[in-house]
Length: 218
Image (cartoon, rainbow, N blue to C red; front, side):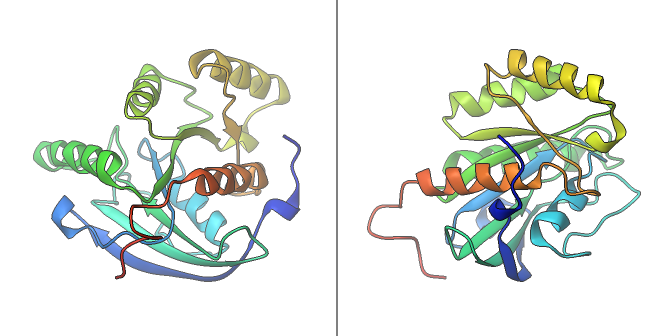
């Protein structure tokens, strides 16, 4: 898919909405939700800020694992197929320096959210270009498939790779993820962001409305 800046919406508002550290704290369903997950230090906050067209909506940190629950941000869009969108920042997995008990509590939280949330339009799985695609990512992608959750692999920090390295990564991604090539992005340069927005809009359009209307009032 060629990069096209016309796919990038005008983000009129971007605000913190809620944080949930257990399933009972989840807010009512609303606009389509885009969940974003990845290993610690994958560049998740930088990518979130790029999507929101803000410098510091999601806090970036040199300490991996700072996200401790589901953190939700609401966007109001113009020049886009929809007016509202919710980004959901999931806790990073991997090498976060947190207690074992807290890390283990994230699994049921993320799984419960992913299985139950009717407004979840797309699960974006981030992969660090410098680490490459690992079995952990493949297993997560396969689990999302068994749950019938639309998923998109997004490779971050591709500005650090050569053209040949990008090609190898893209080809391996097609093999691992059943022919669906990952989107190569850079939160720093904006590369790949139009393609990611296209995937977000496509998934949001395909989201079935919940029974009885467009969503619960909240």
